[in-house]
Every structure is written in C-alpha cells, then in structure tokens.
Length: 230
Image (cartoon, rainbow, N blue to C red; front, side, top):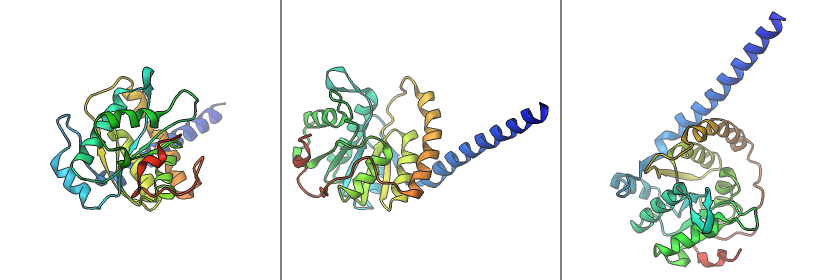
C-alpha cells in the first residue's frame, strides 16, 4: 500500500511540475512581446511606438463576459477602452472584436460593437468575429478568415502570454498591450485556471487543429460593416 501511495505521489508531483513548467515556458517566451500597459489615463506612449513597429493590420480584442442589458463587464470594458485608445493613436486602422456568440440571447461581439460605436469609432473600421469561442479560435480565425498576420492583441496581462504564444505558433507577428486598470473579483481563480489553459493551448499551437468554425475570407483591410449582420 505504501508503495502504491508513494508511486501516486510521485506521479502527481511530476504532473504538477510538468504543468507549471509548461506554463512558465509560455510566459518566459512571450513576455518580451508585451509592449506596454494601459495605465488608466491612457496607453504608455512607448508602447504605442513599439506597436507601430510591426505595422499592424488590426487590433484584436478578445471577448469576455457581458452583463445584463448588453453591457460589457468591467474587464471587457477595459479591453475595449485600451483598444480604442490605440486606434485613436493611429496604431492600426481596424479593430477586430472577437467573442462568444454560442447562445441565442448572448453575444459578446454585438455588445463590443455597440460600446465601440458609442465611443465614436466609424463602423467600417470595426470587424466582428462571432465564432471566437476560445482564445485559440479567435487567433486562428484572425489569420485564416480575416487575413491578419500582423496585429496587436488586447486583453488583461495574465491572458496575454497565452494569446501571444498561440499567435507565434500560428505564424502571426503580434504584440500585446495589457488592459489592466484595476483588480477584479475572482482574479486568483482566473490566474490559476490560466495555468492549465496555457498548457492546453501550447499543445494546440503545435498541432494546429482547425477552430470550431472557419468560413469565407473577410480581409480585415476592407469594410467592417459586412461583418455586422450575425
């Protein structure tokens, strides 16, 4: 019995070390591509210049929770505000808003569109991806469907490491800007879950499976209004 328990302990310890090792590898290899952070009063000017260096075609905003009455959650609003600030600084000519639309009365892209239009962004500069069911799907589709191979990714910092690793594995030149303005409830749970998510997407990035949906190409250098009808 002791031998069995010892063997199980060794296996569990090895699995934990593997998980944290893979997660650490993701953060270590992508941290240099996070070029700045939203400070609450605007994006760091040095980050703007670093973003411009890759001549990005678009700014990809990764979706997250939408509240009742089609209002973006605080985390989503931070991402959108950061992306809009970058757009207004001329970092990239288009916004690509990608999120979950898997339920009849729940649509992250529609919420993101409504908020972005209220901030005065022209509709033709906003592209929607209604099949961004996961971080991997959003980034895969950014290249395969929207033909973006140079882009800025905006999300909270803990999430950026994974997003940038996927981007690199799929052949996309990307830089990340973290939209951290305040601490949100559930932070430690999200960061713990992210450790496992990094491992999962590290494997997917090597295997490169197709996302849940693909579809016809919609080049991001065109008119974004063609994507506004879901």
